[in-house]
Image 1 (cartoon, rainbow, N blue to C red):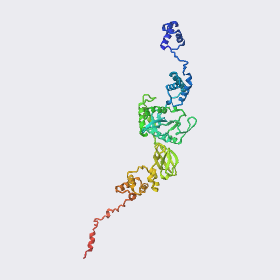
Image 2: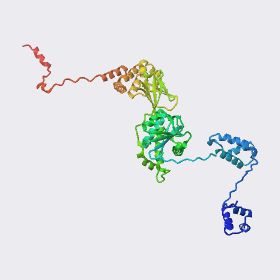
Image 3: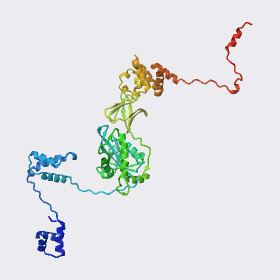
Image 4: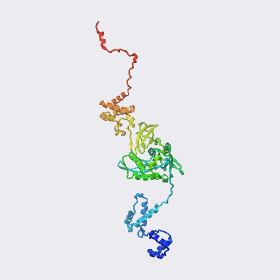
Length: 499
């Protein structure tokens, strides 16, 4: 193997100084064969490559080693063993050769199967406010001390590359709607086109080319924000490559190491701050003299005006049970007693769940993302309780009931009463006619008088509802007496005097 410096000396001696091969060989102390090879090939460098790599001791072990690497190839990349570990396994089976032979064989085997023909792509360019790209990713966080997999919604403005990330427990359609509302509020406006993959929450059927049958509710959301949806070709992630890259880049920036938070609201507030910080310190890939944030500030006037949040719910018809419960999202929620046994509409929002009966709201709960939970609102069972007051003692909805202070004190004072449940249910019944605030005020007034009795509290409520006394007739000024008579009963005693 000769270096390029020696090759240069040989070429100059032969072509420039016209010296003989024999003379060059003697002066430079290289063989004539080497000089002839340099002169006749016309090359300025040579590279040695062994055509056949002998592996005498590995020969009979190639079959078992191939079986091992084929089994390894079916595992996730992070679970595959190194060549050193594979060498140690072969040694345990009786192989007495070197590690280099095993390493060389495994490396060539993996490279041969990982080799993919190169693909060519066309660079994309977007005008300010023209388009954004949307995608989901799965990230791991530590929530209240426990590891948890969450779903992260990613949006990226195609011109300025401004990122937005928000996490959820799921990636259902109502959460897609919420992610768009939050992102447009973060950007201060919306783009004219949205680029998506063929996620099931948006696309119901894929036709030839770019034709799609979009989900009806998803189209309503796009219509509300005046967005034209565009779906990528299946298995062609490069058509929204910016947001695909964002998933990997921001995973390193935001989710490694795993963030430790007490709630998703805390995490999402931190993520918004980190997106702004990332944009302010990162140079734009095209406008290298400016940061992403500076280009975003220039793009803002080109965004469409932000509209009111979309009423992003997913609606489903279910039947309420006779125990006033409906099943939604793997949990059970209570509804007003008038809906028992009837069909109701359940509207699932990102953070709450609303139940309607004939367009009237009969339940409004904060949404739970756990499973197999039963969420009660005790007030839903009040009409049933009035008919069955004995259910107050052991009724599941009334366990740990968070009553207002005065009502809770009345319930505590009535515990030793022989008719405690019936007395307290009487008081609760006043909520239907008078409202909770009026009942609470009546309880406070009764307690201040040292009385805790259902009939007394209802009497106080009735008195509060009495109309105010009618004011006396006002005498006009012209009819008022200049000298008003004085009430003096002593004048009647004069009548008793004997003349």
